[in-house]
Length: 251
Image 1 (cartoon, rainbow, N blue to C red):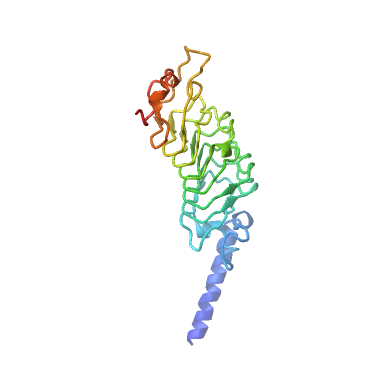
Image 2 (image 1 turned 180 degrees about the vertical axis):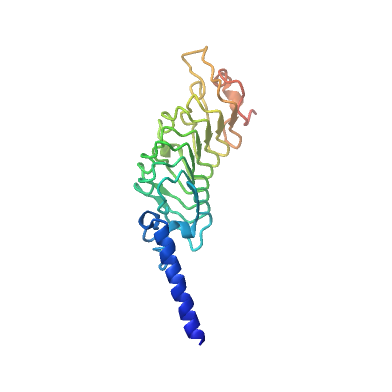
């Protein structure tokens, strides 16, 4: 009968899911309780996302993914874009110290524990763009690229030394926020995007060094400050150490 067939198919599916879970070395691949609606809590991450040799792709997961999934050991690259992740806790990445790139673009993240990334000593690329962040957590020292475009960042939410220890940072994207001032920019930065903020002024120490007229900032090859209230031509002494002028308002 049809009901017997349906029951048989259900049993086979349940057996297959159990076997698949066991094959994928179970516990560390399970989602955290509450990260998905009831009925999905015990599905391993690699059944909901695509796992390929060190990379995990959890893009636009259905049903909604509202927190960071548990990752297989040795994960190096996580792409969890366009989900409904709301916050990142202290231990969400704690065990996955192998991570080199995390992309959380287009979620609903408004809160990140200050120590969320502290154990990720190999992390080189971090994208938190298009979220709802008003302040930044501590960032790992090895970052070469950081993207927080399209958030709600104000200057008070970005600590004065937020980027100071990032001595290898090459790309810094902070466009489309509410910053009132330019943060400290490490020497290593090549591309700096600060367009569409509320920056009202710059000074001789923003990019250069007021106490050293011979100082040259040689790495910086692209600076975008368009879409800010600041009229850059009012501060001619602020760019003398640079090989390119910022893109922005000059009159």
